[in-house]
Length: 358
Ligand SMILES: Cc1ncc(COP(=O)(O)O)c(C=O)c1O
Image 1: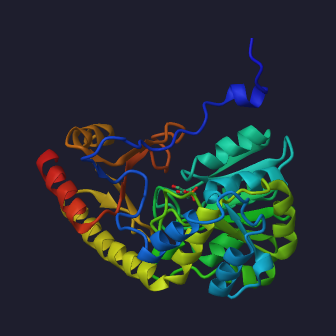
Image 2: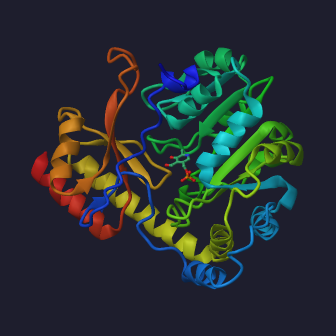
Image 3: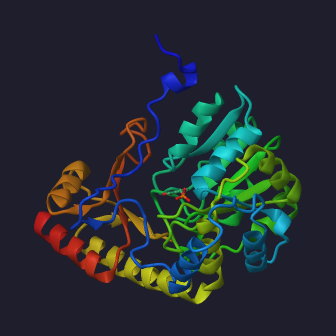
């Protein structure tokens, strides 16, 4: 006998990438930043840790929202912080999706969207992508028309490609909201600046951002969403009162104020990304042109799972992904490796290992 809601019993639960707790790994599997956060972040945490931890944080995160708003040239009413983008995704599902309502998202992409829709009791459909990760617009349209929520990562994961604004605008549900997950927006050659929110269609778009990637702060759990004030005000009713703690809010504020640090790291990652992509191609791999801090790569003859295992034996972790639901005979992607861009040294170790293996 189970006491759980049937929706909870039915699902396997989201399985995050491996997080080995011992040292010595070249860890290229969960898209963390290989560089440390700005020294001003560490200083801000140290200072905040020394005072007022006995008091709850500001439930509205007033100071933090002002800094985000300045950066994106919006009003603070357009900003809501959360315990990582994952929490904002949970808030979005709870805000907009009633049991039975439809959530759509591209497939393959971030499978957490599906888990959250299941937990909420919503139904879900996968928007099919072509083998080159472009949209199958005809197939997408009929699903988007029935959706309450469409969730689209741009750049996408695991592919790393970035879709055009026109592609994105065509995915706004006529009777719902589009969530644009820009976890990797800072790594684009032309970075995202929340431009779509300023268009007339922006009234029904929410953008989510995270500190886990470009700001090197996956360990503190902080993100924020941007959108029109009426959407953000509604989401505020759904969040926990104190969903972000004092230490992460001051850390996030300091990180945003040191744009030069983040941009310098993002530039290094873009440069290493170019070098890794070219080297993989010279080893016979196909690589999707990436606008993120990882690349999606496939090999025409070597099984991807055994490549992953051979690398793991050498203490190099990458992410092996397979999509059994995509029929091998169709025009879809079936399996591959997603490799996070590490430091130049880490990428050299990976390439040396791959040269031995393939
Ligand atoms: C597309 C996408 N969205 C959101 C997240 C999660 O971000 P956060 O660490 O802020 O919860 C990830 C993490 O890998 C991701 O790939």
